[in-house]
Image (tube, rainbow, N blue to C red; front, side, top):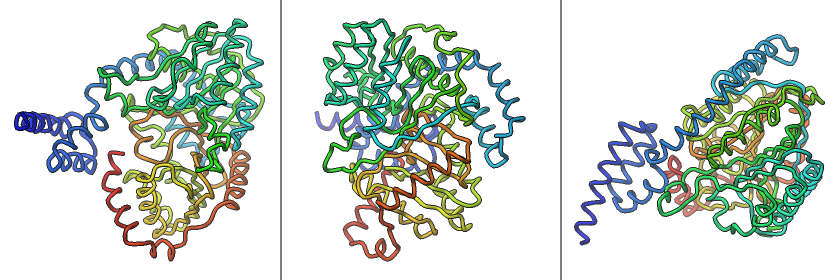
Length: 477
């Protein structure tokens, strides 16, 4: 039996090797890692590939999702042309970021919207207090999706707020990621369902679809009445209020947007909702109104990416920003596992004398990923970048270029966010907001310590070994 089992595994691995090379056409380094794993550790390689590597079984469902996306893209094609015309003639369309805005418009179908008001939240207490206040003022609908929604005080409190609005006749729709909420019982949302709310799990992980675990909806979006939108790094859980002692203080960033960009967030939610629910939703004035509030002056693009896209839109945005920098690059990320293109872009920028500051958590939440993070941090440190370790856990995902423009959202600076997770980021073209976030970054520096070359070089042999071994698996993390 064992011989038969091993033979079956080897045959399956040969089949997987053909898929890797000729069908999926993975990048050379990732393909090589998978092939070596399948060859020298056949059983472990088989299991790893089935859970974390294959895309063949999910290709059909993502094609269906693409059809929903394309349906919406056709509806807003005219808006794209109109906004492109406005972009070319707008005084806000500074040459420093015009190329990035054009790329996002053409490549990611992300219209640039003018007249937005943006608020940064770096405290979970403040963010969720404002979110609950906005929920209480909702008149027509509340739509939200989160990667993690815990069954704790905050999770139950938010369900109570939504349930009260559903009972009052407000439409409430929620998407949670099945992997991120694997420990969250469905009973948590039962009062909301009874009140008329709709709850769906994104890519449920069952025996039939066990391989869905590799594709995670990492988006955190809330849209209220089409006027107010939230996105950023904060999930629903007490740790985001600083209530997890091991990782306290917990530092994150979230955005509250009022203005035309909210329509892009709503469109993103509706496309995800139609995919998970199978329900047809009319993309009309109710959800995507033509007349919206324009309380500010900030141009914004909402850019989504995921394994359903041929291109890695958020990564390409990051790459364009790094390559366009002439003075400074500020980065905050909990995980630093860049692919070759982003790593080389950062190194070239550092070699060119650009001031690069990268802030990472001083307290890890995933040790193996942290080992890889420190390996890449060391390589960038040698190139001339400055690395700072926040005193606590840093979960913020932000990049600021030349005190001129920035991106904040859900995507980490890692390969998983670039290619496997469903992500969404706001690209903000406003020097005033860029300088405002730079001031926040400076405040965070006061709670951080700089990782110096001498300290990095003097780390122990065991730590160096762990980093080197962990980095071998970076392409498949």
